[in-house]
Image (cartoon, rainbow, N blue to C red; front, top):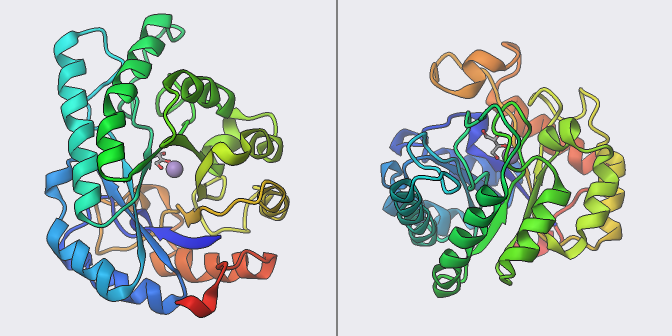
Length: 287
Ligand code: LER
Ligand code: MN
């Protein structure tokens, strides 16, 4: 298992000033770093690629769709724009050196129509991800679709729904991300959800129930670790938590995190906690 951390601990708008984070998290002992992507071309793509190369960190990208992008929307022009956006996400992720793009890529955060999801929405999701298949092959990119909880968007909440969607898309590069923060809300049992996914689990967001320090809440990380061993999980496990910093007034941690928990705390205590449970890089000597 590779252990990474998301830049979300520090910021949601990664810029040039955040580049020193890469060698720093490598020094902390991580082997992966995840970049949140909203508008792909806003990222310092060329700088990021060379920082990933020089630090030796594995790059993963988490796409969060901006409000004007919505693959499941009934409006044909919005669907077309959404496909163009998703293609750009894949291309920019590839330019940064990533081989995995995750996130709730089916609808923007905050898209919560006051009705149940429809069969037409499901069909539109299948269609758009099938159209993306060729681009995924071209860049050898895995698309790891992440269910999120009902307060973010209601289209895909559970791993069972994600498995049904993946079965309909039927593309070898399309799989599932489990985020323990979301699964804690929507799954009856996170451990059995992970066991049910098995080899379709492509990526993991390790997050406490309040997005704070791992091990200080009620997510059953020891049991999750056992489940990952049982399914012989070989993907990345990325800490996705929010830290508080006065220098980052626009970060999610600025308004959500405990003010006594810094981004560095999220990284260092999180990694120490995971190590204490046995989560290890598969081959630490190789890096
Ligand atoms: C992205 O990985 C995620 O978990 C979302 O909650 C971000 O809005
Ligand atoms: Mn997540």
